[in-house]
Image (cartoon, rainbow, N blue to C red; front, top):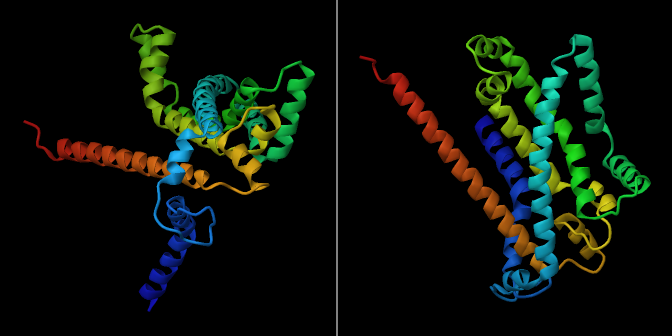
Length: 267
């Protein structure tokens, strides 16, 4: 009886999570513009999507800003973690507390604050201001991802490299970075995801003529969402699924190789 209840519960959760996505995928192949009438299978909306310059521009803005902001936020976040560790325990606690404030702050407050700051310093709201805004709110996430790995590593390996003749920069690059790489990758992916998903901060800092996928969807809600957005969402979902499958296969192969070498008797 308990197994049946667990199975039903699992099915309900999966339907709740994935049924809207399945519905969106089905509608992307619907010939009709209406979401309530099926007029036959068609690739019409995919063709229109690739011919829609506004949508392609929004896609480019979304992923170019996400990639650049995630890279810069990761570099700044890693360096910030190194700097924070130079303080004592009270200083570290204080700085990490300040780092947590943007995470708890409402997005609308962050967006309006950044917009006012850009205007006060004479910045023209454009692609660059959106990039700066995304770097700003992504850095705390990188710090939260990297700091535990850096604390776990300690300074013994770094000092050992210095004792063996390595320069501080070489020791940091060859010893510290490889050990904290999982945290760096996690921070980068989190920053990238937050940037792609963001709407509120982007809406207040983008200026006229700059659209991302989220702001484009918001602008179409007033007049009706076109099915080309269903097609775009389907492509993004398929790409994400493919990346996850490839990553999982790569990690499983790596773990299999490690298990093989561990089980192989040494001569």
